[in-house]
Length: 73
Image (tube, rainbow, N blue to C red; front, side):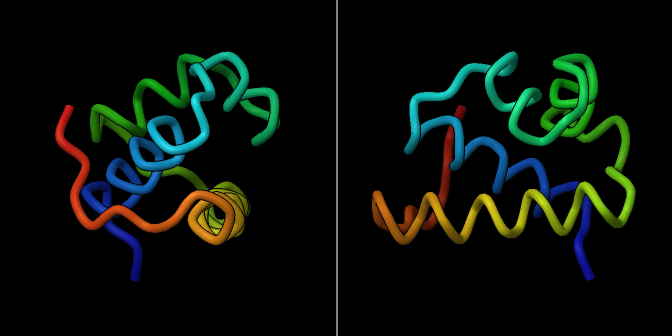
């Protein structure tokens, strides 16, 4: 089960590893940069479809750039 904390860490890792900004990440996930911000700040949890998209993107990014255990921002 995905938690706000897990989603936040995955989004931070995606941004850090790939160099994407919130606008670019929002375009890829077909959402708004405001939603990305809310998810990173753990204000809201994305819906199921967005969680699946985040997990898929996280897997792709970590395969390409390597996994980081903890993101500190």
